[in-house]
Length: 73
Image 1: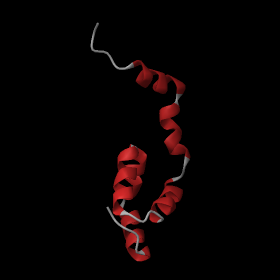
Image 2: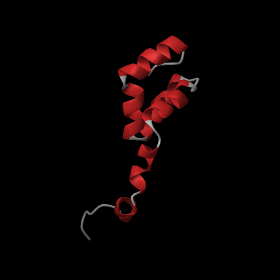
Image 3: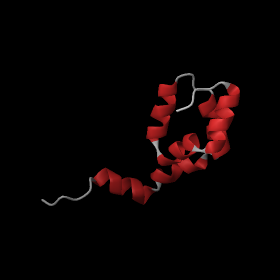
């Protein structure tokens, strides 16, 4: 027994399921994240996947969230 990656991770890469988060445009994700009412929800979303974290951390999102009174991370 070696220290190889878990099988499910390899299966995800082969089936292409890891890339499905990119199917939603960043602009739409930003609008969804603006509707979150708790800063903790934004933190949780940022930890969900890299593309979501990129949207939440972007300067454009922070400016827009400040204008709309949404919580900022």
